[in-house]
Image 1 (cartoon, rainbow over the protein chains, first blue to last red):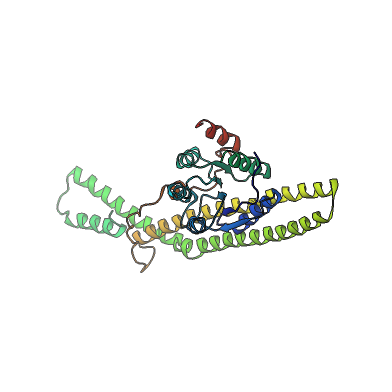
Image 2 (cartoon, rainbow over the protein chains, first blue to last red; image 1 turned 90 degrees about the vertical axis):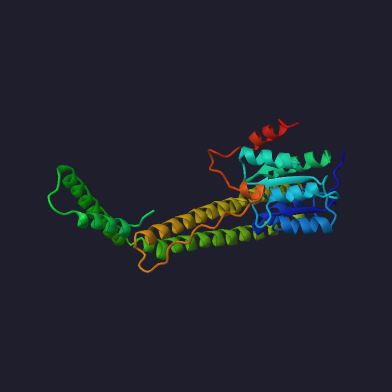
Length: 128
Length: 193
């Protein structure tokens, strides 16, 4: 199944440099419609106001973490099926289990490479 | 917990209350109390000589400033590298064939490597948090043993506010030996299917 790369992608991270890196990697994967947020609360407001096809979020952010954002997304009737990839340095088993139980679509541990990002995005969007 | 002054006063009161002929037991107790009094006095002077207040007034603030500077400078350097990469990508658009492909691959590898700044930033944040805990503990010790001069006693800890699951599980990067790999995580996720 072909992936619609014209979709809006929201990337969420409190490190501006990381947002820039992910945006550039997405551009190489031909995703050009990318918006940014620097914490879960800002991301949730953008998701509720816009029309996004994918969220790529960090975990450790203030005031709202990526896991709390994920739970809000899954509890929202309009957003609950939105593909959601966690990209984080949190690599403990308990984190992965908590994210999976909250409904994460896939999980990437930092530092990651472009191939891992491409593979997870394709997997998530093909099954969306 | 009684402070050093309270212990010293208690020892002196007991010594002052002893009078007349002493039994062997009382003499032994007296000797123990005298030794305890000397020990308390020695500990107080040793703590004062350590100038522990320097830890909070100079060393910890200096260390956190240095760490903040590390984050600031690595962020600036990383953004400079990203500026150059974006310039190379514009150049790539003017090329074609294997040259464009090789240039694209090199730029991708630089982007991947630049994510170090995020990880080091999170690690440094963890170190700063640890320093702040040390700072509060030193302040408590200094105040209790009188080494802080007129410093106010440490504030009692406020009851912890409830935190979300996301915040409770936010630990930052693990050390290399303790971190799960992407393969480990993929296997764990697959086990749910």
